[in-house]
Image (cartoon, rainbow, N blue to C red; front, side, top):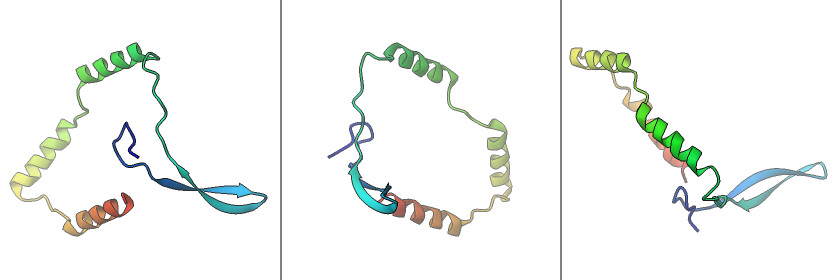
Length: 94
């Protein structure tokens, strides 16, 4: 089964539940809540319009700082840290 919102497969999630003072685990299947198409639609459209007009949050000063460091050859890349982060991300995504 696929979640209609994220298009990711729906899989069981273990939750710790207290039962008569003892901890037990049970498996539940996550699912998306059905959307009510008419409820709050104008508010959502208005919010989407406002977000589109505002544009993405961009730190232009930080971008200029990074460009200058790259141009001068002062920007160091920690490839080990990047590799470990990528491996960790894909391990938790399973």
